[in-house]
Image 1 (tube, rainbow, N blue to C red):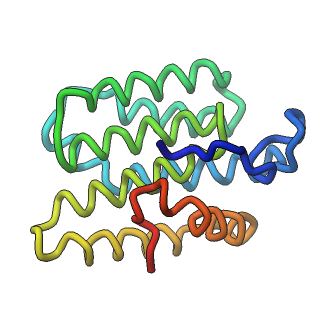
Image 2 (cartoon, helix red, strand yellow; image 1 turned 135 degrees about the horizontal axis):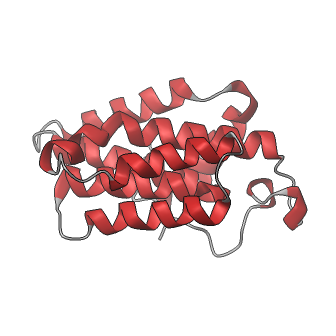
Length: 171
């Protein structure tokens, strides 16, 4: 469970009663896609012939350009997550990260799902003694990628939702 019981209005689009602009929604989607793509090689190493997670990332980027509708992007996210179901470890988490990134078009708050699963993939790919450090490096990398326009929003949201995101955003 990565979504809060009570949605943060800052992560709800203006047309749905929140305060999130379309421009910032697109930035969240692109950031989430970048987080997922950073670890996608863990999935592709195990399933090189399965394009579903990569397709999900292509779909969310196309959505930000106005080339796909939200429902198409959401469906691509579901397919990416289905690719993860019979896997374990880093490959599973990487596919879930891609799926979460794609569904940001539907619910912006899924951005942290993509980031959290990417951190979990980095941890799972590392040795047990290096897992925490690998997760921290991944989290630091993600934060470096944040556009200024959404930096404060994402960092505040990470602090608020860290406990439901497996504690992966601890500094």
